[in-house]
Length: 399
Image (cartoon, rainbow, N blue to C red):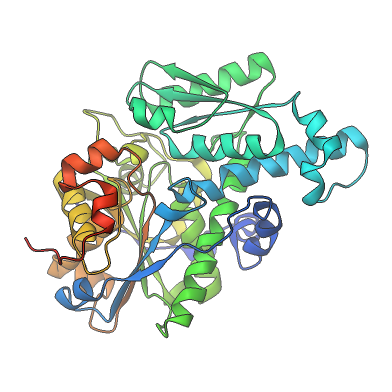
């Protein structure tokens, strides 16, 4: 389904622009430099898909190769953990602390007293755990019963607590226990009274938006006219949408939000004209997007910046995974990672949607592969090849 939406750019708040705008990546980089691998993730042209759908260009940013964690989420949670730890140190020692000092012997001795926690479908928890590990802090991650054992084991936290129910339930449990035990909650979703930390998480994601624009320039590709962004609670989508709009100009790029039809909380909110929850029916294979209540800050931004909200089916996500796998230059994309492409194809195949969103032979499309094969067994069952075997293939996709 496609819901068209009229952006109200003037309603975007200055606080959101200052956190996610042009200068945001410059603020983030010194902290992420504490992580050893700072290479940009690849930007891959999808030339044949562009030709088939009659647009000028399509590129996909492959976040499946981000910081060895396999997801863009590596950028957000770890950064927020570092900022919060910096504030704790400054309050304790009464002096300013530089990013480099966060891993000094003095800081590391203090870090063992601090526990960070969050709820996750997998990827955000990996990032929070990695940030805590870099600093020498402890991490406790809450997962819901829909998170597979493979994804749970890959988080790398000091402790993983499994919660009965869905993602929203695990968020509430993480909040409750963090208050009870004095742990620092680093959630990537926001609610009334809890907005600053999720905004810091989202600020970390602006790195990938800046990298993308730089890489497009190096490839002699003009900036995107349309960006298709998959969403769970919406933190990633709102961050990238706002940053690109601030850099390129709000009228020069259109944002389309893509969600599973089984977890379409932003789609439901857009239809209702206000933040609302989505009533779950059955789980989606797009596990990282299986969220039923939008982030307050994300909805605030996307309700003012998005031109359309699109839902995709399980089969559409699988089709997109296979399209990315069987190409001259394959991209290993998990179920959630391929959702942006499936949303684009849904729009590109709909004549009315093309007209309404201005998709034409001069359009330049940006997609983000938000994750690699976070569950290799599931990936192989859908694609027919293991992730490593896909990377060794050069065959083109054929239906």
